[in-house]
Image (cartoon, rainbow, N blue to C red):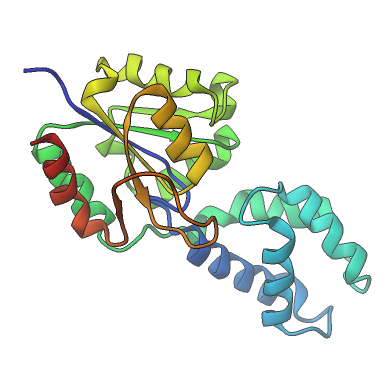
Length: 222
């Protein structure tokens, strides 16, 4: 019987990035900013989220724009970025049911892969903080191999590393283009982790709860 693989995106698919970002920014605000600026945490948080465009804009730019708006902050953008770089992982959380889902898939002998865009050390720290790396047979980080989604070659690299054909792999992600369309164009079946921020993805399968995913995958393979 041919090996079968499930390949995941990381942020906003396995990693509850919105909650993690909220927890980190609350910590950063309380530790470094609350005594310096008159704005409330909700205002600071909302401005940060607006500027960072759901993770699409790197944080050196975001902090630079924040300092241009809130001139009373005495810390530099480099100092705030360094705090983000080294302490974000302390606040990382997975979506509820993620470990249960991954364990169930491993028990069914699926090979598990991950493809994530991002900086190598930062993404490795996030994955380690979530405590999920041991479930995976292969993890690809875009910065590490010089390719990033939606480039088809990054999906082909994952299939190669997992030793599976595209007909025997399912890709799961939250972004309609970088994840779902890109994987579909390579010939993978896709499942969309619903994310209202991006709008709808063009795939026949989607889910909200991690605990529903194993049954959906079994349906696709049977």
